[in-house]
Image (cartoon, rainbow, N blue to C red; front, side):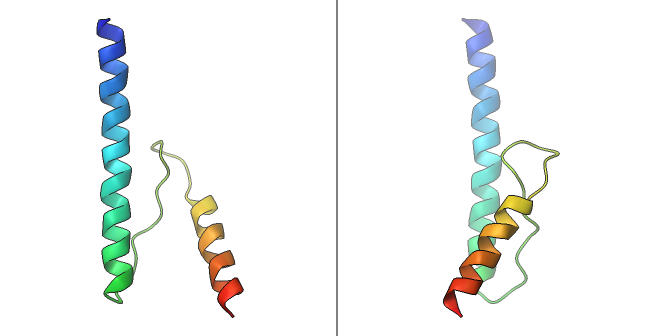
Length: 62
């Protein structure tokens, strides 16, 4: 039971980290400031997937 609590706590912290980044990104985007570098759900992974989604969305608008 204790192991499950530790894993759930770690998952919660990862989700909170991503949520804070998303809110910061949205704030910067809507205020015309430079957006922060993409982060992945897991630390030490690249944000290339997110950058690809943003690029495709920009291409579709044009």
